[in-house]
Length: 509
Image 1 (tube, one colour):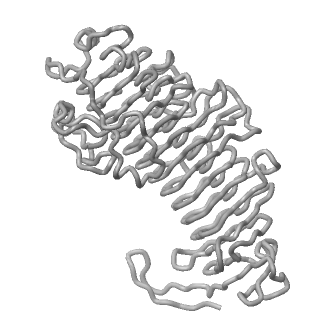
Image 2 (cartoon, rainbow, N blue to C red; image 1 turned 90 degrees about the horizontal axis):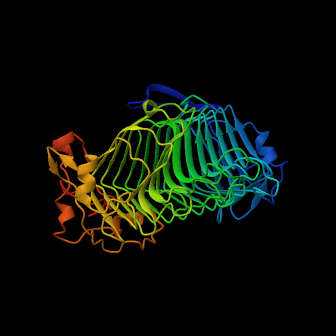
């Protein structure tokens, strides 16, 4: 049976026909021989899987109850006016227990909404081998207000899909990742993905993955046009079962046009001998992407990884701005807030990065580390504040250009690779020079509360002031006017959402 409606909008004009939807109810006290109504509900997921769910249908699982099995929905093609909806009813959220498999699997579907529901598995080491919610080759999928835990792979996996919105997802106690986004190898066929107000916590690692990283918070690869914002990653990666490249809180690789913003990544870990365990990362093959307005602190790996690996597509034209790294990288080989690495050993594959108005504070090690394999070109640093315990930079910085930055060493005032006089270093290395004048500085920043970050919610960034500068501090006026000098539009918004003084250094005001 169909009903016909007449709708006019910028997306649809004229007559649109809709299938009349059904409401199906499922309760632990129900009966699969009943009609699935609210008064006589079904009992099992198996009944739902055999019922032929379609456009305009709504499935209600009774809140506070657990339903074992995988809800598998395939080949449901509808439109935004008649979505298929999966949710809970009654008191509390329903739980779909995928046991050793997926909890929810969507394949070749469009316009499906999943909200107000929990998904559990038997555990990454207790028999589960799948992702919690798996979205495969779909479009226009909405996932909101879900809790996903106990899966060996990702809590939420978006694969080769487009126009996917995920919000208020809590992904914890999974293996490979909390949230994973991926297209096919070598293709950017996962696109227009929006991750908002999500958390990835305590996803320790995949015990079966012995050849690559696992234990990530939020990861995006082989994708384009992805926004990850207002989200948190913490305590991930501590049980990655290998030595080598490690997990990161929030990051992307082989991706184009990714924005990571207003996020917090803190206290992420890696296995003994693991290479990363960092806060944020623009990894191999990333192009035209940006990390902005983010806070990273107390991660075992670097706060901000700038990486290119052998075999990746070219890495170029990326921006890191208005971010803070506090005491990151003191366990992994990074030993710094920023870590730059390139195992391709080809400068043409790793180029064009703008790094401006950031704060890097490391009370134990360096601000920036260049790996012995870090060949790159056209990396520019403006209006940053770098604070380190001893040498501010370790390794070979190559042809990087530092202009209009502040440098301060906690032990000696200034030290870069054994040079203890700022002006000598700048002159000898042709750094911090503009039109023949010295424009960088070497003064104590006098931050309000450096080294003591403890916020855990992105909304708290609005009132975060640990790294604000005192009134009349020289660093508020010693920076460069990036628009006038280099035609760089800085967006005029700081990490804590305040306007940015035109010639200020740092990330928040």
